[in-house]
Length: 214
Image 1 (cartoon, one colour):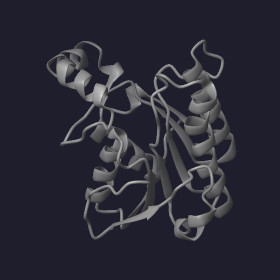
Image 2 (image 1 turned 180 degrees about the horizontal axis):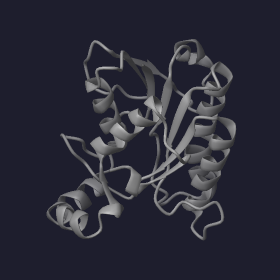
Image 3 (image 1 turned 30 degrees about the horizontal axis):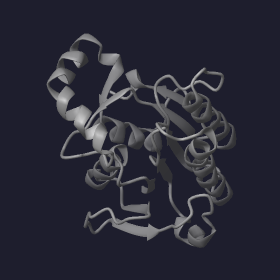
Image 4 (image 1 turned 60 degrees about the vertical axis):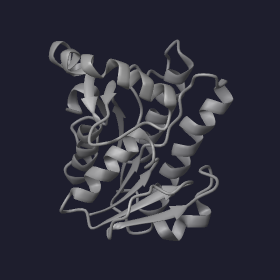
């Protein structure tokens, strides 16, 4: 199996990258990046892309892959709807359309979030809800993953400083929360393993809630 990862330097992407590289059935991983991952592995290649709304410059690099794990994202804090839409809708849709053109049977996993709702009251939920809907309509093997609280594992860290501060402060409470409310908590390695499962055998539903990412 050959997989492409977008957002491999983010918290979720780091976890997916690690799980892909340790999986014996993954023969090659292509990371589409702006900045290097810092990971050296014989099965990992990196290709740089300046504008994630236009994949034309790297389209030949994307041929022949079985799955795309789209983990690129941004917090909505401090962003207006237009700026957030560019990253959370325009970018993933550009990737989904590219893979639909290359091979419509490609497995495409879009990392969304718990509470996403195309008709929701919160701006981020509506934007991601549109992306979920349109990716699933475009690709027969398109999935939207909706993780809740994600615990970083195996050395994974967020690039967002205040996320790390929250995880550091809340770290001792996460195991307790996982015991009393397990359906709301997952880990970076579990999300990565679930993405590989989507590529191998699929999920019954195209929207995969946090409880199924355990």
